[in-house]
Amino acid sequence: MIHVKGLTKTYRHQPVFEDLHIQIKHQKINFIMGKNGSGKTTFMKCLLQLEHYEGEILYNDQPIDQVRNEIQVMFDDTPLYLNLNGYQNIRLLLNSHVDQKKCDELAREYLPHEILKKKVKHYSYGQKKKLSFIFIALTKPTYLFLDEISNGL
Image (cartoon, rainbow, N blue to C red):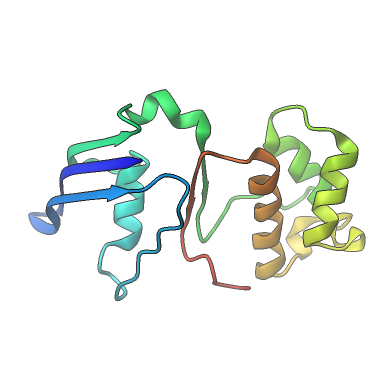
């Protein structure tokens, strides 16, 4: 469970959140919806300690530094190596040993072999997002954060 206690975030003295308290249940899908500019991405960045904030955020009663290797994030503009092909990106970005056959089989569930052999700079926006999903499926994170998930799909 993620406990957010007293989260306060401001930009130039303009509050985004003031004394926010929320519990996000473990192994559940939680969806945050709001108008553009309402703070959805800022909230996610606070959860990931990518923004300065006041308050406390705990993951199963532990600070993020204790669980960071259990977290996977997919932002709207996931960075990829554009001059490498899909397979090369997968191998490089996983940064851990994964059975090659399993990796290739899973990758082809998301993208055809012909696409995965092409350089990523030739991918559509949706294909880049699907390539990012492959990383997620292979790493099986405990905590998964998805920002602007439906864009391009």
